[in-house]
Amino acid sequence: MQTLVLGGGCFWCTESVFQSVKGVQKVTSGYMGGDEASANYKDVCTGETGHIEVVQVDFDESIVPLEVILDIFFATHDPTTRDRQGNDVGSQYRSVVFYTDEEKQKPTIDRVINKLRNMGVDIVTEVHPVHEFYEAEEYHQDYFNKNPTQGYCAAVIPPKLAKLRKEFKQYLG
Image 1 (spheres, rainbow, N blue to C red):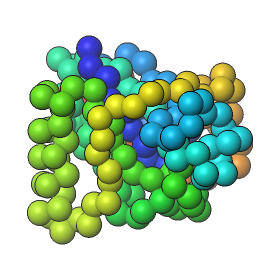
Image 2 (spheres, rainbow, N blue to C red):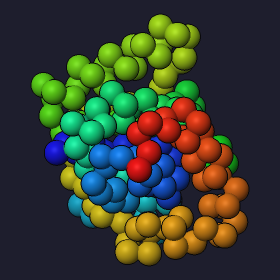
Image 3 (cartoon, rainbow, N blue to C red):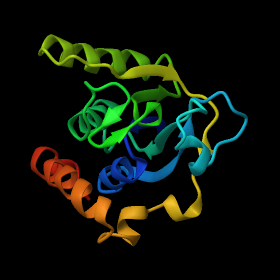
Image 4 (spheres, rainbow, N blue to C red):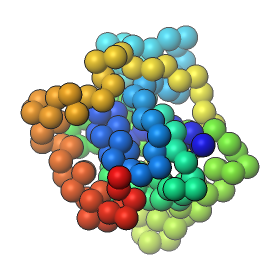
């Protein structure tokens, strides 16, 4: 098992994408990267704590390779906008990858980002070693599955899932 922590805008969106991927054992919404000794939704939404909305993805690399996890991540959010994903604006929505194993994961992360840059994609995604992870409040966990008709979810998440089904169908459970 490997763990990677990804920030690609609202964690509800990123969580819903990775919950569908074969080999992903667990997806947990939370906060990472800030300067405060704790994190909660209300404080993180101010943009003043330095934390990012992230998902912790635990996956079996023998089923879904790290490179595929990264390809899915970059395909299902906009890694070219700083501190923004669609209408979500603020430093808590920035694109970031937190790795848990510098020797195994960092070279693959760098290779995937360089591949995209060589294709002309102006990546602004940050790459950092993992920091303290603060699990989001319970009502944020599995949010889309519990609230599929909520306005934001109904508008933003289905196109991401459609792209996932189209481009990565062999990795869907």
